[in-house]
Length: 466
Image: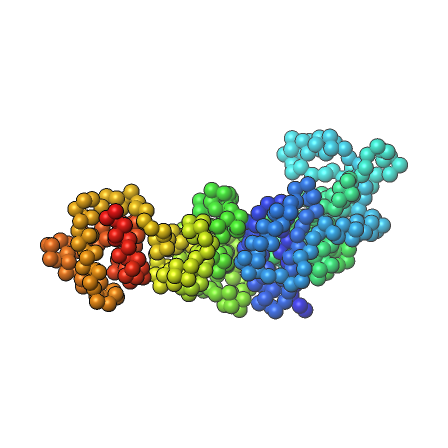
C-alpha cells in the first residue's frame, strides 16, 4: 500500500502555526513511508474563501519547503461529484430531504438547550411522507445516521475512541442552495484521492465519527485517522494573536528561517528521545505516530527565537548576506555593491553569534554599509564631546602611519595610544566604536576596523571632525 496523506486547509484566512504543523506532520509521514503528500484547498465556502488566502497558504507551504505531489486540488471543482454521491445516498434510502425552515431549526436548538441537552436535529423529516413537503421551501439533504449501537475509531494518537450513535444527529450533507457541506465533500475527496491516512487536529475528532459513518454507508474503506492535540499559548489557553498565532508569512517577515520554524513545529507535540535540533532528513527518518503526545503543546516565542538563533549561526556567511539583503535594500536604496557584499561577508560571522532573527542580523550589520557620515545614536552621542573628538583626531594621525592593517597591529597601536595618555582602553575604544558604527555595541572594534578597511575607517573618523 502506498501511503497518501493530504493537507486540506480552508482558504478563509492565513496559514497559521497550527495549520503549518498539521501540514508538516502529514508531509513527514508521507515521506517517511516513501508515499505521497497532497494539497487540497477546501474552498466550498465560496463566500469566505479568498484568492489572497489561497496565495498565502501556497506561498507559506513553499517557503517552508513542504512541496506536494501533483497539482493542488480545489474542492469547489468537485461539486458535481459530491452531488452525485448525495443522489446515490438518496437512492439507497441513506439520506433524505429536510424541509425545516430556519425558524424551526432555531426553535429546535432552543428547546434542546432549555432541557439541558445538546442542540441537535430531531429527525422530524427522517421518515416523513414527502406528500407533506411544502412547495415553497427548497430542502436540504440530510444523512440518515444509524441510531443504534456505537461508532468506534482506532485513532493512531487518541487510541480507541467510541461514541454512541444516538449522540449523533442526521447531519446536512447538501445545503438547500445546492452546495455540499464539508462533512460530505471531505469524505468524497479523500476517497477519490486515495487518502490512506487523515492526520489533523483533535478538534476534528467529532467530525471523524460522522465521516466514518459516511464511509460505511458508501461501503468505502475508511482511512486511518490520527488526531493530534492542538497548540496552546504559554499560559495553557487557546492560541490567539497575543500568543503568536500569526500567519507563517508574518514569521517570515519577522526574520525567522524556515528550517527553524520546521524544527520548532516538529517538537510541538512530537519527540524523539532528548533530541532538540533535528534536521529534515532525520525528521523524515524518525517520524511516526508513537512520538506524538496526547497533551496539548505550548507555543513559546522565546524558544522559537533561540532555535532560530542556532540556525542563523549555522548559515554560511554568503548565504546570510543574501538573506538579509532584501531587508537592507530600503535603507541603502539600491542593490548592494560588490564592496558592500564583501564587507558584510567578512563581518557577518561575528554578528551571527548574537542575532536571533534576520531582522536583528540586518540591523546589527547595517553599519558596515551605512552611507557617510554615520548616523550616531542618542546613546552614542554621550560618548562624543570636544575632548573625545580631539582624542580621536590624534588617534587618526597615528593610524594613518600604521604599517599593515590587521587586528593585532591595530589593537597594539590603540593600547599604546591609551597607555601613553594614561587612559583606560575603554575610554578610547568606546568613542572610537561610536564614531565608526554609530552605536555603543558591536563586535571587537579592532575586528570592525579590519572589516571596514583602512580607507573607510579613516574617512569615518575624518567625518567626525567636520
